[in-house]
Image 1 (cartoon, rainbow, N blue to C red):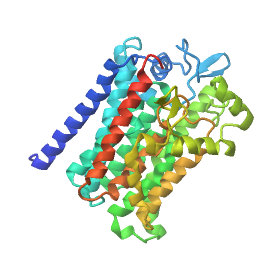
Image 2: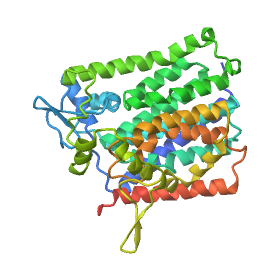
Image 3: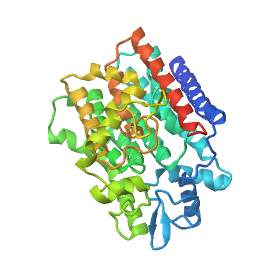
Length: 407
């Protein structure tokens, strides 16, 4: 079958976007003193440990945020990043790999996946955006949010979230492209292996599935829904089972992820021991970090608050989410998805610790960008493009700040 001009253009744009995103991410690691292997990368060491037939880290570079069990140190975080790193570690050896480089590759692939999702939404009539608007929104995602800041660090927490976002973006793209919940559910299962609560993204996929299958709008008949819902939950169910099995093999309990005995920082440990991992006590603190936190004024200078800053401070263009505040099924399901993802974050004992912006926003960044795409106009007006440009500048400053040696 001959390659069409549309397919060639898509391949050209996809290649340019990947190369541009990777060059920008990786290029900044030369400008700033980011290390090839942060002391708290861990997933590279975990992949190497698997190759030796063990689940613990025999010689961890640090014990911060690790979990000790029966005299051994374990990575408590779910293992998707180690799975992704496994071929790289097997090929080059753990001493020669560059975790930050690999994170930049994953980050660039995520930007491509979002671009493809927007393009597919465009083809199926789910967004009015023209191609220029799709490019603008892709730029906003890649370098106008804290995704940029997190991608170039490569530490265990950031790498896990970046990896999860990649597969959520793929899940959106595949759901719209294939008009099937099976492929979207499969991609979502991989995201669950990095961030288990990402399973709450499922309503977003259902919303998109309904939009590309108009006959299902307003149709709640069990005979029409049991099969697609089964397809959606099949792979994530397997992923959850694998996580529980992983816990059993490590800690002799399927429900023990290792968080309750994690070697966390002293300031966090006090609250953790007093109020637990999730508590209403943390609600106001997390709301501030997520929605109204602002930079600190220190010695006449404005500096980022490392405890977290509002998503609207780091990405002012998100104010255009207001266009999606509509009483209709699609908006309701996507906002419901965001709500489900936000609730556990609001009750969590940790705002994200030392960070630029609010790093946990990556858990719901894809649903937000789907909303932006669905309710954007055909041509983005000048003020929309201006706020995207401001968002890029803010996050460029964030990348500089988080990487400065004085920090």
